[in-house]
Length: 512
Image (cartoon, rainbow, N blue to C red; front, side, top):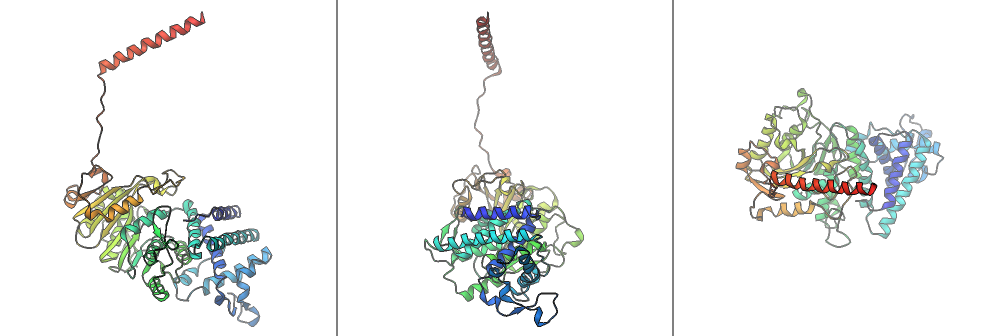
């Protein structure tokens, strides 16, 4: 997580400039800031600026070509503000869209409809100035504090994405990074296994799985591996991986989908900002008839949108649940995406755990009877603030065999306050306890159901109509409270009444 307070302050100033400059939509602001960050990042890649570039709309004549050196950040940042904006709009941005990656890459494909909408030269000038200051701090951290440039850039982008708090719509909201990390730590994905997110948004789950695997191939040194503020060990050096193996792995084994073109671009750029050379994120509705990929992935991570309902006529014919509710259809989709033996970690609204409708019961039955439902971890409602106040749960299941018993955990503390401010508290909350207990659950002695975590047998789940509501199985301990008999309470009140009357009489005596 981003630790440098100066960078945080500069990012907040950047937000303020875009707001006052006429770009009030947080998603639009992040997208435009991202384009500028990319322009600053690619300036260090000399090979991109060899030769000449023909801006779109210009006739193919020698005089219309521009030297690519003139498209560099270091060049246009020195121009007068009006000329700077014109240069970026007409030449630099089209260059970014078409020549930053291979022609057939998802990045180029989904950048075709992207637009650069910074409206005023003054906003352009201020934004460039602030980004320069941010990179001065990034370079300082890299040189003095020993952080890698890639890690700091990634943290900067993560902090920038927190501005999506105001942009949640259609049930879409950004999953907190520490909850994503928790899901990945529980599943422990392995290299060269296919990983997918059917509703990936900005790509948080794909990125977390990627960073987790890099950590497993990073030498265990104090300079290489560090625990973050939530206790998760991370290191991205991956010095035990060859460059060739790493490039092959990251381009073949990660796949994201989303139905929002803007979020597809955000996901692509988020992954590239963290080091992906050719990320695979595509525009596709994985619930629709157009989606055909099944029995393909070893791991699926998701926090699918809770949009309520979709058009029945659009639902993929392989999805058999009698419902149009997306939170249920996505669970069925994920089960079908998994290879035999594949594992999923999915965040759902808690209503999925105990909803009484036939589709609710059927999807829970599928997870219990057609897969091994390993864990149900309830998450308190405040964790997704300020995006939403909904109570959620993390489900972990493997497409293999059937359920024997399921591990339940009641998360009470995620290491932050549960109000809109979400202030970080000392310690890790329940996060590391969940990780430790989950991975050691096979050795745990079956206990009663009075604590935060316990096992529930498949038979008990079946007998409860496949309900997964934690409160159904948790045994609450109540302390016996002794109350005086009503006659004794009345006697005590009369004694108190007499004392009050006597006190009032005494006070009145002082007034005579």
